[in-house]
Image 1 (cartoon, helix red, strand yellow):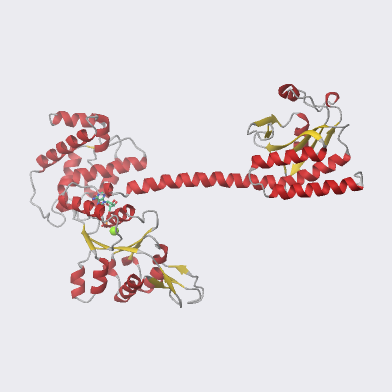
Image 2 (image 1 turned 90 degrees about the vertical axis):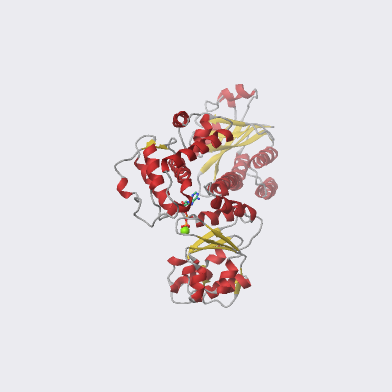
Length: 505
Ligand SMILES: Nc1ncnc2c1ncn2[C@@H]1O[C@H](COP(=O)(O)OP(=O)(O)O)[C@@H](O)[C@H]1O
Ligand SMILES: [Mg+2]
């Protein structure tokens, strides 16, 4: 520092301070690099100044070509004076460029600019790591001296912080944009997966369910969904949620039957710190669902005490944590499901009547699979398609005898059981045709479960008729495009053509 004369030192230091203030409020990397270059040119009374940033992966230095220009100049870090500064950390002061072997003359030839003298210093971040180099070209009078070296080094060290901050912010913004994009994509996926179209079935009752869900999409009434296990109660709850204005708020599902009595309250409403030793505060499911939907699955299995608390939360729209003294407001739509006969539970004193009326403003009943047997082929095809999509396999189809067997089986576990069976067979299938013959043991056989409610029809004929109808529909919907119709039906194109031949299309 000794070589800088007093007054000039003061002036330069105050200039550097004022540059720093401006640098620190500039968050855009491009604008920041411009600012630094411009100020360095003034400060060192030279023609040009620029900061080069080191790209270690490529062993390259990059910089903006000119002030205000978005264009980027890249150079090999192993060539030239800035490269030496960036790779070794040394300050390089070249007084006569064309007489100095360190100077890389090709650069001048490229830019058409003639360098007489130049000064380069390394730019280090706070941990001392070199992130680039600072270069000043052509001192207007004479050559760069020791004072210029000090000055450029001081400016370089202050620039580093601002540059790193701007780089970080740029990176964060890019990631943020990416996340926003991804998020929008995921929402589109979720919404289409759980749309009413995800509820498959052509029977009058299931169609009625789908229509009802469409109809209540704009209201936020509480809905009770009943039906045997595996009939799609949760699927319906999701369709209701994702069709509603709350679609992009949380859908929180809670299985009441799986909750031990002692945990029900803290699970639903949360717990305050210090209720017992070692207890951490926890948010309850009601609060997690705030603004969205809480799906209380198997609500018929809740104790009377828990029922009373839920009723209070629904009526007063507040929850109180276990061990808490204040109430927390919550805005939750409740969908409840059960496979129990709630009126019967009420009659025997196991379910509160007031809660029942509170949750069943609308009642949806999911039919068991035995009452929609005509939809078995469609459902099976739907699940097979789902399997192929999830495992990214080519479209598959069922061998005719497999389909016959699926249609003839009892499904006491309803659509869930059918789905599991289809998934299992698809996973075992070798080619694109599900034609397993050696694995029937796992299939529920006719007569094994409860007797089917409907009269057995000549099954083969019924299936053929349904297949024919579905194919007609698919062809109509796709305006005769066999490829797309086949895809819709979960068949290969050849599979569709075979069937069309068989049915005399
Ligand atoms: N009508 C249907 N259309 C399409 N998939 C169905 C249908 N019914 C049930 N499923 C599927 O069967 C499985 C079980 O359904 P789920 O909603 O969990 O039944 P529940 O809650 O009544 O026990 C899920 O994978 C669901 O997607
Ligand atoms: Mg369920």
